[in-house]
Length: 457
Image (cartoon, rainbow, N blue to C red; front, top):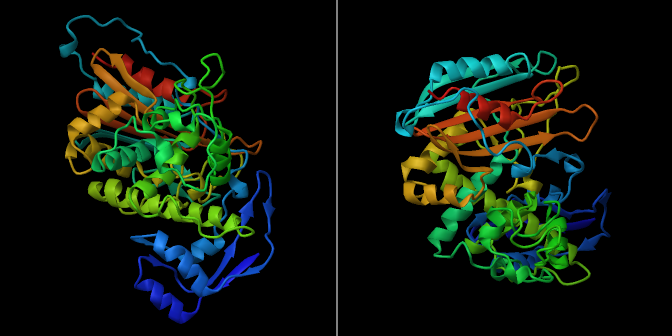
């Protein structure tokens, strides 16, 4: 265990510098793929820490206590199952009843859709909340049963309950990544190798991967999304062989693609120098520890300031709030699951948002102009950045969707699920549920999308 004692005078000197540590004790902890390992004790002076970090980290306040307790691969993320993007579920939806007449005449029967959706979900989930907006205004709301059951806290569902939205976090990361690239005049087809940490080894064909590849899951990566796993995957390289199971240009849904975005965003934004190499061997593990914690902080700060703040969202978090929604199996027969702080897998997952907050972000992104212009937002959707269903044709127009699922590693099968839709007619729809859909389980996106299509008149 490494301990760095920060003096009071050092705290004040850092407070006036670009990087800030709160006074405490810094412990570096390293996580292996399966279990936590303690490192040998070392002694690093406050002056050495300041000398190593301050010149390479800018415009970012760092909570030293979080650095001290930061774990790169915490036990509670091991074995968790997430969704698989377009690799599961239907990609096309046909109304059960034929629709005739010119497309411009078709519209969603909102009342029929709402009633059909509630009928499909009410006896098949632990609880859920849904809200539909048009032109940014709420036109329908549904809320049902428990966000936390009576044995866990008796919190009913409503559109203000924060839940881990799982892979819908990719949509948020795509907004941030796209906005930053546009701000810096960097092409979506620029190579990511120019912005990766210099001290990382780069394997074969890493120089072929673009930002577009990351945001459309065509990078060729197949890896977990914690820092050490991503670093190892970059060192291993990727294939360009079209006959290989995974190769650059081939769609394969991986959280790592957006995990890398959370590292790239602070580098491009100037929060951390890509050449930052804080400590030489034998303290190399500290580079990983500090890079991981600092880039999580930089990613969080950028998203909070540039995506959430313009939408008026102030309580979004990568940690699990005390009154946050818990995940259950269905039928409910066990205590709920708190999936915990998910900052170590941020980028591809991790954000805790309410139905209302997510709709606020989506509406501001789509038409508000303060995250990016409406034209740039539509281009991002058409590019498929952070999206699963891209421009799916319906009788009312094109539909865009992002799906999210987080399923615990135990036999209990407790699940939290999210759906975000950009619909025709200037509508946005969000549905959050805190269990599987039915038993046997139905695929959430299939259920909701089919009900939407079936109620276009």
